[in-house]
Amino acid sequence: MSATTPSTTTTILRAEGFSCPSCVAKIEKRVGRLKGVESVKVHFASARIAVQHEPTVSSAEDLVEAVGKAGYTARPAAF
Image (cartoon, rainbow, N blue to C red):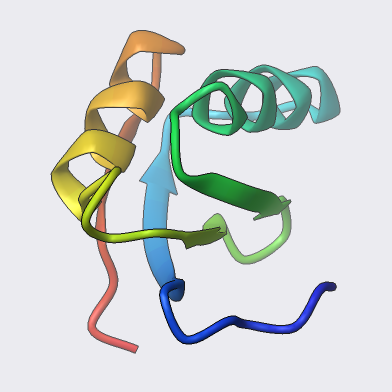
């Protein structure tokens, strides 16, 4: 994992609807295409998605929308 720069933040999303490792790659690819996204890591076992991104370029809502376009449901996690 790369270091967080002052202009980036890590957003954790909780995801629903994926059931196989190929789903992980689909989500990572779709979210990773967004401008301002530096890294995406889907944690299959815990159904969490960690995204390091520039919040002024790609907001949490943008991330949730990208997961939705990949065919899955996500929402920002409280922790």
